[in-house]
Length: 422
Ligand SMILES: Nc1nc2c(ncn2[C@@H]2O[C@H](COP(=O)(O)OP(=O)(O)O)[C@@H](O)[C@H]2O)c(=O)[nH]1
Ligand SMILES: [Mg+2]
Image (cartoon, rainbow, N blue to C red; front, side):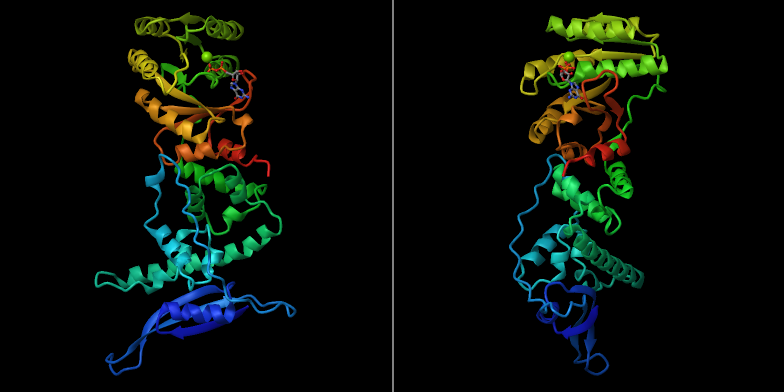
């Protein structure tokens, strides 16, 4: 590796020198700004010093050409609902500004999609110290800048491996359509290089799981500690409410011997009642059919001694305000109900965001994602629930009752996301 120091009056000029001499692959190791010449501080001029490095080239390889100006990157699509919650601190704009300058630091190339603080690293040591800034703060800034530079260098090395056919954690998440601002957040929050781990590396699952745990809420199923537990499943038609309700009931009753009962308010189709009656008979739990909010209250009272009461509801369309109001009125009759909104993972993200928004009038406590086996775009789950208050309770992955359901945990979601076929 060659390391060279460049001095110039401005950062731009110093970067031009670096690029002209070392080419586009150069990495900026350090930047410094100080005053030189003059007498007792008078008449001195400001100097920018940039330390840059380039890996040694094999002999038959020509020296690197100066970087071509980068095409202006399209702004990353922002995920709905969560847009305003990213901790950007204004840095993406700075990155974009740097990328748009033909003379921008060559290290920006290396850092596309990298931590924002790494991408803006030359700026940190150059920030003019204000009177209020303590020496400690400056030291911290400098250390942060250096850390970001090291992250960027490591990423560069690992990027080469990725180019050699490795499928990284980041690749898989991209394939799953995780929104790019979230991918950038992963790069910021993870240790340098972790997003570029091979997706099959056991460490990759740990990295993803930790990121999910830090940025989403998980309730890992239903906790029966808080008694009595009355749970209603709500959502659009055909998303898997009844099947999921049967899976939950079967798990609790058959595996944990829980004393449970079922109530159904889905009386629109005879087949819907019959479907649940069949499950109730097989599992061996009582089922009550209710037509009005009053009847729901009576049924809940009747089952007051049960450890778990599961309530099925009719599918509602988010576009039908009458249906939505009817559901709200129904749920208001029993404020103690814990509401799980059931969403199919096969729904278009835009529609799922709308369903989430419309059903928020019913104040769901948890979200269940069904049919995770039928799509390879599971990034939607993360895009929708990123830094939202509502928690993920279950994930279902097939039609089989009771097998195809798992309590939602960071590990379970990480595992599903990493199952992508590349
Ligand atoms: N592949 C797959 N199908 C599911 C899953 N959950 C439910 N289904 C199917 O989706 C269809 C609708 O389910 P149902 O429970 O009747 O939906 P509801 O109208 O919301 O009550 C049925 O054919 C279920 O077997 C799942 O996790 N994966
Ligand atoms: Mg149903």
